[in-house]
Image (cartoon, rainbow over all chains, first blue to last red; front, side, top):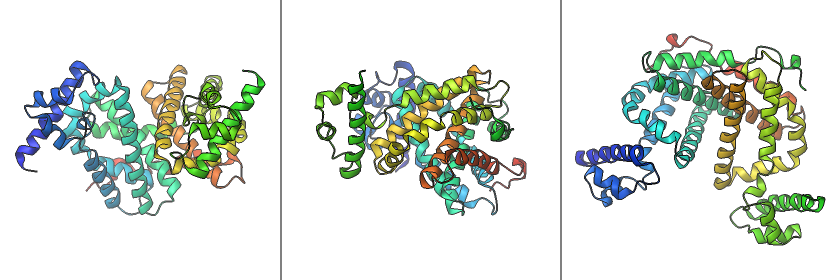
Length: 195
Length: 195
């Protein structure tokens, strides 16, 4: 795509974010987004299939970057270590996208249709990470479990970082992975008094 | 609902499962489900809003049972211990429903529309468990992380139990929670060589 196409794409994403923020998702039309971005509605549809997707651009690139990083992680790492390594490698990308993803978070929080989209997106990402871990030789079930736990930790870190950018994403990510230890059972299941 | 209503409901669920299995989700109509169950289509719609929901009955009861169990778990437990306690308390319910849920799993695996439904269902369950943990005094973020990790472990255990019922669900559940320890980072993040 020529540079002018990339410019239009970025303006369309920014316009989508602004209008969803100002008017809400349901009340915003693709025509309004195109007008705000200074392009035709036809140009909008050259870039995105619908207004929802304009908010989730770059998802595939992010998934590819993560699965590549899992593949490239040092040999012999435990599943969660390989994931942490991969997450750390995409930190520059996440930092760069923060001006877009941080306000997007608030819009998603109040829009059920977007929450559904996030569920699908997260499930796809978990599936891709799980497959990448399987390719490192881990059992499929274990890989799926690790991918879910890892994504939960990444989400926890991202939320903490949105709320408090000060310490930086890396510090929040390390804290999230440390927190996993404190969640884990400290007593044996057989000692639990099940009512 | 009188007993005959409950009987019809169970027959409708069984007919739904059978027809989705035999013909696939898309090719099955509510009229066919009703005919197989020996009731009218109108009776079908008295019980369920659509054919998809006939496969996910009891979801709310399950969620309530789990959140009640989290609330009733012994005081002072770590988040994951409270969850394990709750999961163990619903084992009889899960064992009882296995003749329905185990074949349902294979149908879901080949039906994208049902997978979407499962994502929503799981997200709701995670939200409810997270809220139940918050009510025990845990920080909201921590509660959400624990709920996600716990549900991942429950899913891992259920899958292993569907594949191999021999050891029983409880053994698979304990194994899943033990497995979480082996996933966790064994080296410090600062030692990871990020490329």
